[in-house]
Image (tube, rainbow, N blue to C red):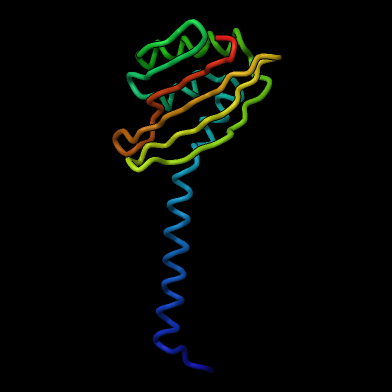
Length: 138
């Protein structure tokens, strides 16, 4: 059996640790799939589990800072008025301060809403700090 040179062992260890580090960084970059699923299924209750208290919320006819409970009712009303035919994440990432963001397209019939989410770390958990559903018709 061949012996691995010390420099070879260092290279192998470096590759392993780099892979683990990259996996951790990129896995934190993606939006929690439960959030996207709640939007796709128009489930305001599940979505509100990830709301910060308070949350900045924009829907057609509503724009402001709301408590978690108020925001859930507003989002429920939005989902009832505009039931989803699809929701697609177009872009997502992470800023230097650790905040996560996502931009998507929410479709309800012939109406499309550009959807913006901003998540900030609160007590070690990413919570939705800002949620916007904006249509071109607004």
